Length: 249
Image 1 (cartoon, rainbow, N blue to C red):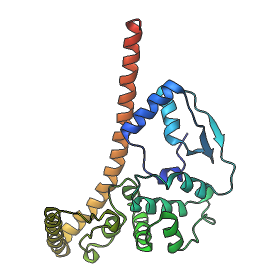
Image 2 (tube, rainbow, N blue to C red; image 1 turned 180 degrees about the horizontal axis):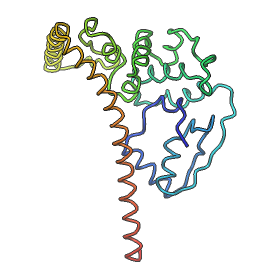
Image 3 (cartoon, one colour; image 1 turned 45 degrees about the vertical axis):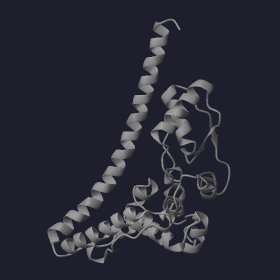
Image 4 (tube, rainbow, N blue to C red; image 1 turned 180 degrees about the vertical axis):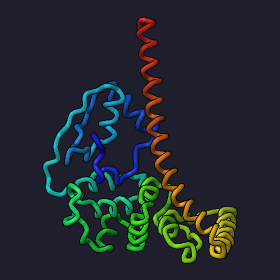
């Protein structure tokens, strides 16, 4: 069974947390049913994967409401570790979803930026940045915390229109040390120098565009790596179980 696009709008569980979930399901069984919709997992994707990892039997219930977007957002937007950019990326992604791929209707499509911003608890500018990132194919990088919405929006611009990165308000540390400030100033100067080179050289411009593609590929490779880490953790647990059986414990 596949993950529903609405569920996939939020970042995956860390490898360590997923490993702990697998152990819990293996020991106590599935405590909460997996919710399905349109033949896909709407809520409980990690619980479903944990069942597959440890051999437990997943229990499914079908979503019977009339607003799956609101349902998913209500379950996931309150995660404490999500940044404002990640919340904005999730809200934008969910607003673009169409039931069964139907392009004629989309819950949330008509929502204005201010309404999306209220849902994500961010400013409208962050929502606009998240929309730009989503259209440029950088939404997953924002979702996974690899880029802020503003950084992704800058990368999505043609090289000649890009600006040096500015610190995201959501990440500003009012007690930032002078050393950190100096390093940030150096980064801005380096960025400006790099932009001048890029704008004056077509070959470098093409290379910069290739960097964006590589960043998207890196995000895919990161998800694959985490999945393989989960598989390795399961193999390790299985080896330990066989060892205990062999020792008669």
